[in-house]
Image (cartoon, rainbow, N blue to C red; front, side, top):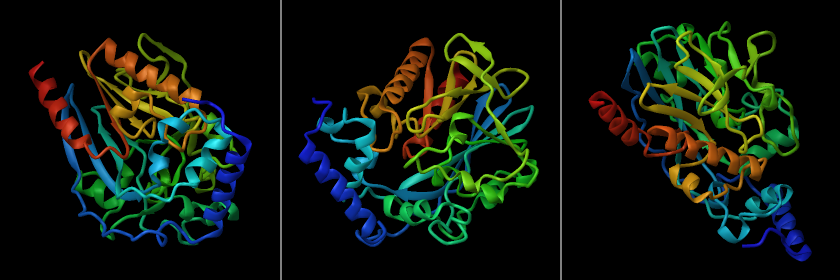
Length: 331
């Protein structure tokens, strides 16, 4: 494996990237498959009075190299990774966009908001810099079925959008904040401080965040024996935020500590467990070294006690949760 690319090859990747942005949106340069059937939200009983709702809201397609770079290109410099990824024209099938509702005895906590059917429209990108709004649909293809909206998913869980006490954003890419406007206008939104600092080519849709004091910044002030500095979200300290940077340098995850077992709602820290085990690098990471550090942290957590990682686009989440909740009830 090499960590450098020849100058002519760099020019090749940059030229391919420019061509991708000059060409049509991703939805039109590959045959768009039919949308998958809409899944009904499902609750999993975790114990200690906690339920976790899996809310499938929207879908996304990306380049194959977006999902994972070929091994021979996994060590390219951070600045070249995006052109390399954009040079690839093979597209995945539809990937799920999951949001999560933690039904805790103390409060309702929503993690991410899924993707919206309005992705790519002028209203969706209102206030977003023109270069970013024009470029986004050429990087990913995302949408949702008409009935696949956050408010309806919450209603299926017996919850009104006004019942949500806190929304935690793992990061501010479109498929995680697409339905943020469906939250009650009083719902606090928790984002890491690093995420709020705009970066070039970062894809962060900070303009979609509400203005004013609703946006709170994560404060990792409490020490945890497995995850280092964390931010408790419950008085019982069994739900807390951890830093999982790499995909974006401000990416964060939410941990549900069940005593003998734990769950990490890990957003886009990886696409699936195998990626973590193989230390495989997606095409979209802001910092490769931080990504590898996050992988190591997730592996250390697994060594400490049985840990279930739930990644936003992992199609096996429900199966894993079903098995986890069954084993947890037997423990």
